[in-house]
Length: 128
Image 1 (cartoon, rainbow, N blue to C red):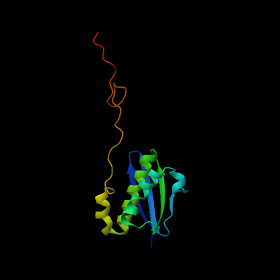
Image 2: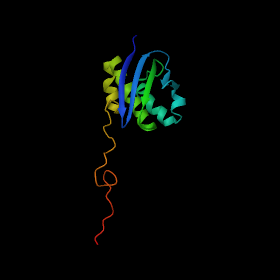
Image 3: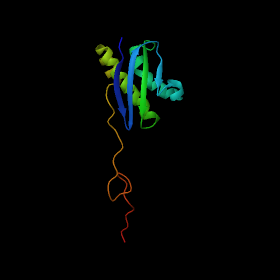
Image 4: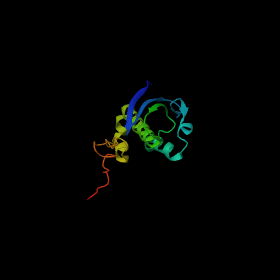
């Protein structure tokens, strides 16, 4: 089987995902999953699409991650893996969509506005 690639994004994080048939090894930025994400919660987030379809040990996954923080990176990887699995088997889309993995989370940091300290914060108002 050839390599299937997909891109996942979340906030400032971008994940390029390459999926091929294999033994279930997940490599992120040339490091093991457990090494890159020490938190078991973030490891669980990355593996969610695989456990939903119960194809845990069937694919080798290579992920190139950059930008954002740990949480954003893990969710970007999840979206990328989901999109790659849908490319491999389009019939798996309804199961993944029901779990909410197919939808890209559009929330991002709001830009800073001129004349204010932050996006919505205002300077202290003085009546006199």
